[in-house]
Amino acid sequence: MTTTDTPARAGREWLTDWDPEDESSWDRSLAWKTMWITTGALTLAFCTWFLASAIAPNLTNLGFALDKNQLYWLAAMPGLAGGTLRLVWMWLPPIMGTRKLVSLTTLLLVIPLVGWGIAVQNPSTSFVTFMILAALSGIGGGAFSGFMPSTSYFFPRSKQGTALGLQAGLGNFGVSIVQFVTPWIIGFSLLGILGASQTFHDAAKNTNHEVWEQNAAFIYVPFVVVAVILAWTMLKSVPVRANFRQQMDIFGNVDTWFMTALYVMTFGTFAGLSAQFGLLIKNLYGAGNTQIVATAADGSTSVLVPGYVVPLALSYAFLGPLVGAGARVAFAPLTDRFGGARWTLIAGVGILLSLLFTMLHVHPDPSAGAEALQSDFLGFLGGMVAIFFFTGIGNASTFKQMPMIFERRQAGGVIGWTSAIAAYGPFFFGVGLAVANITAFFTLGVVFAAVCIVLTWVRYARPGAPKPS
Image 1 (cartoon, rainbow, N blue to C red):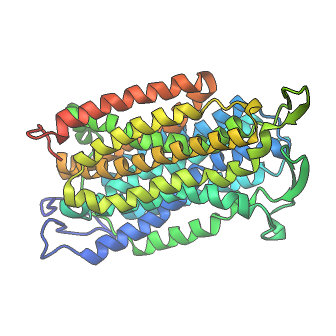
Image 2 (tube, one colour):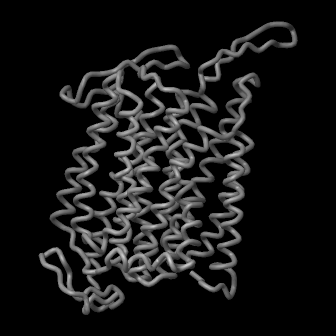
Image 3 (tube, rainbow, N blue to C red):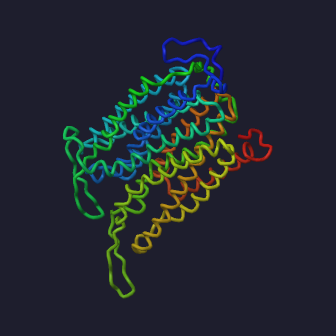
């Protein structure tokens, strides 16, 4: 991407004559500085985007009158908003430039973070208010569709698999961070000025304890402020220009639609399961709503409370996103070395098989006893973690494929578009789990993965493929 024929833009933030494919003039230091600062901001964006999924499982324990389907919707709304906002953010990199885009987007994260911190302190906060805050959290999801393409402008094609894999993977760690930090950070008062405590009722143990749920949101605000300052003072912008009409040409390329399907299989699954993982564990293995009386052969009875796994729900919710994000980081360099298509093929097969295995463990029988339930739970957890692992591989490999298939400006647009559509994952998973049988929903996932496997082999991975990548 040479920019010598691009009209100069005013201001010290704009670079001139930027061509990362020219090794002699490529500013390696600036490129990696841009990646690291933007990645830090992206991690905070993902924390904000998935904050609802970390808070939602706690709300009924805090006294909020919300039913199971409302909680699924609450965890789903950031996906709907994030996907829609990505359709806006995807056009912004060549219009705003990296510096303004990263700085201003990160600053907007303060709005939902402060809003959540205030709302969870008031038991009368309505479901509508929570849904509005969940929608505003989608700003964090929209950021990805702008940050990733703008970073891609700074790197040559040979290093984009590593650079974008690291940025996306480390950014994805925001999902596991918010799931891991929330149960811990709400356990003590940070500062008295941040609000009073709430009473948390543990249905499984029938006990109450004091929490500060607002900490789950307020803890990120200082880091957001630091990220904004770093972005505004240290980032530059590449003078790539394309108006809205010019960027529309990506939709005339059939590979845009094929890669969208593949990224929905990988990141759409990662994001959808990340948003619902805690609720799935709680609803399947930690219901705690009903006492079941089991009668033994000798006529004796015992009371089984399926809520005994409840304390594990939030403790394990971070594990899947952590593995998925880690796989994305670990496999990013391998995609640069071996190509992306073969890894996408492996990811598709792994996702399909993991879904089939997990389906064996989504209908636990509370009357089977604690030992059988625990075994079933471990099978469910193992299957879900495997799904996350293979989505992480696919997330890295698809981002290697796109810069290889498309020219640089188009690649940025396609990255933005595919990530926008895949960001609807939390919404579709939330709606699907709220209205459909879980087995039917997972079966649909198996069928979709099978279609994507065939597509990857025929178009990109087989010997003599039309678009080897």
